[in-house]
Length: 237
Image: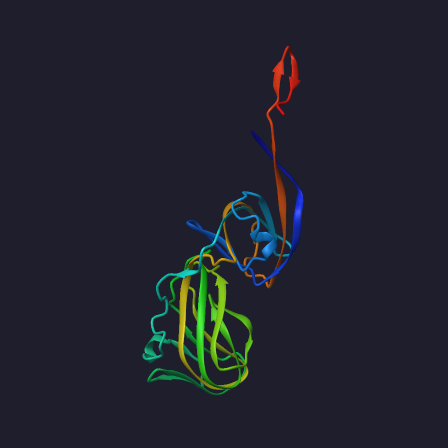
């Protein structure tokens, strides 16, 4: 059989698409239902960050998110020395990171977190008391919207840096509060809202962490290979 790519079946926009973009862990997550119905189809999907495009072939449906081991040296805030970058106003002691009267963009940071370009990382921060707002920090970047409530907050990011994936917590505006844990792990498998994929191509500079992505799923049609009879091309039906 010959396979030919045909025009778009569906298209749309995804906010918060999660992408694992490294060999052995190629998958998409947080997909809309209209894409999930193509699980296992092999249909080609084009994903744009607004200027650049990644092309993939859609594979099997995810069966549940699984995670690797902890990547932060002190996820429970027991060892002050593990947090090698602390702006004035941050302290670490007895299982708490404490922010006292912080202004904007003040961080508590671990600079030697293992890198892994293309890995999808999941970070969970537990805040116990809070006045003001904070943001997640993964891979040297502030990510996610400002967080303004106590409890657990989760963020995902596809790693881009090659040397280290420095991570921690940033103040976002004024901040006073306490934090009892922060974890960061590689996501190894997609949830039931995700699909495995086979990479086809990716334009240089394509951004897996764009706030929104647009997509197109293309039809793939099977065409019978013509045969020749008495010098004339005919087709099987």
